Amino acid sequence: MLSKTVVIVGGGLAGLTAAYHLHRNGLDFTLVEARDRLGGHILTADLQTDVSSDGFDLGPSWFWPDMHPTVQEFARELGLSFFPQYSDGALVFQRSRETAPERYGTMRQEPISMRLSGGTGAIVSALSGRLPQASLRLAATVSRIAQTADRLKVRLAGTVGSADEITASHVILALPPRLLAETIVLDPTPADLIFKIWRDTPTWMAPHAKIFALYDRPFWREAGLSGAARSMVGPLVEIHDATTASGKAALFGFVGVPAPARGQAGRDAIISASITQLGQLFGPQALAPISTLYKDWADDPLTATSLDRMAGDHPQGSPREWVDQTWRSWISLAGSETAIDDPGYLAGAIEAGARAATTLITWRDEDRLSPILEREDRSRS
Picture 1: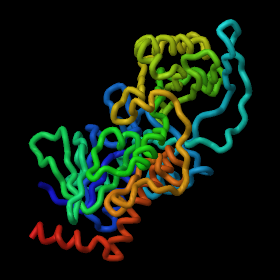
Picture 2 (picture 1 turned 30 degrees about the vertical axis):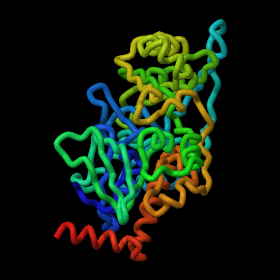
Picture 3 (picture 1 turned 180 degrees about the vertical axis):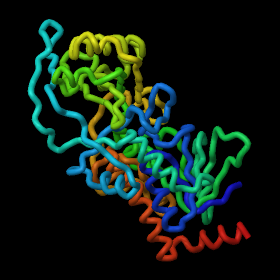
Picture 4 (picture 1 turned 90 degrees about the vertical axis):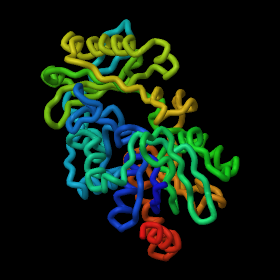
């Protein structure tokens, strides 16, 4: 049995942010991630690998400094650079299949969208590189968290050749509340009202899919187009220039087909129809991409639940009780959806992870964690 003070469940931006602050303040932790990679909903990929240091964002792509200054400040703290979303040139609007696409001049976007150089995955790499690698457990799933008299027992499933239980004084649950409700058993069982709050909280962007078409150059710019398009036809309803800071050319679009219909049509049919649509919008050169990338988050069981297959409202940010009295001193919810400000966004993940870590650091400084820390020290000696 491994013995650690704090267990973080979820290796996305929120979990990594919590780990970063705990580590900087001398608190021991183990971060458990069910995937074989870190990042969660952040996934920067290219043709060669699922995780790339200079690829395309299959998950979140942008932040807005005027709206989300926390992301910009955190990126600078981590030594990351960023650049504005390309928006020069005309926007294309597709009103119907019977009429030709229309072009409209674009004005400066306010607030301006920014992208991280190397992709959003750059923030994942920067954070993980600052953490003790021995404290990161990948491809391990937490199935149960049980209270004992003075600590928690965290059961892991799916691990091979390693301990299947970790003891902890506290668990930070840095995953969507719906996913928590469906995948982790808590003993004792929280109140029904708490489970209802978790299940009623939409997982932001979980119902959606993105398609990237990669090209040898951004030819649409030569034609005076921004790469942005809107469509009332589909299957892509919103399209943007996804060319990287290093010059890898691409267009990407959000698929407007609901998740159940995407599953029925199949990946190949969705991609084929999307490329045909890009040809209608941007000309014949768009019909011959070098390759395509596709990610349907609704089909990712480590992101979406059955409740997330239909698009829902944006999670509402406000101070609220995410746990009941029985669990209040034992667990913290830190998924981006639980943020007070900007829930679901990158800024929300940073806020939620930092908030959970700061609470434990404060408890440590107030000696509220001292009994556990003393028992951990004795167990190591």
